Image (cartoon, rainbow, N blue to C red; front, side):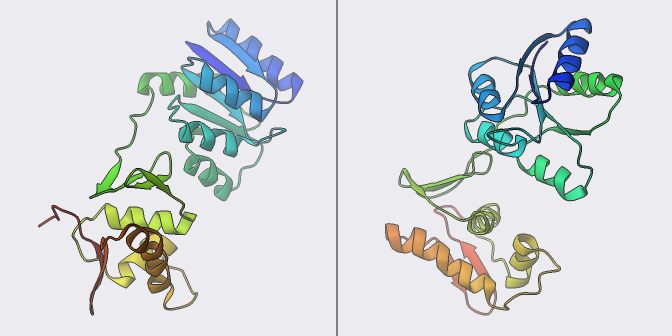
Length: 227
């Protein structure tokens, strides 16, 4: 099993490299984010052990960039931060597992073995509706082959609609899924963001994909809508 270690602290990097080598792993190691991204993108690794706090580019950004480049190598993130939002941030960036420092080296080895058994995750399916496609993993939307620049919230809203093609989704459903059930902002936020999607997709490409169902909500109308 070949592992890439991305860790900027020399002592910790040395401990990881020696421990993994003694456990029978082939190990490469780099000390900053850009180098980790370059090595992980170019090399053929079974796993990446990735620290969060890195110079040049933090671990979250490295992991997200790997997924944007369609590199699906399992990533085990290391951090001294134990807050739940940080763990969620790492998983949302595409990490497969998370280990908080300080940790027992035997646990690190166990988690790497589990990732290896699991293998690289399958590339998520690209969602589509007529000429519109959306890649949830790479976070890229295209229409007629052209990239459509979307904000994070616009992307999440479009993904939710595309996962239910032809189905009418109420404002309450959209609000809960895209903004969360605790959202306490402007009441017409769903309508505002639907308008943003129409401006960027329907009006730009002369389509009518994002539709209003009066009194009920919104849907995306594809060539073969779901029954």
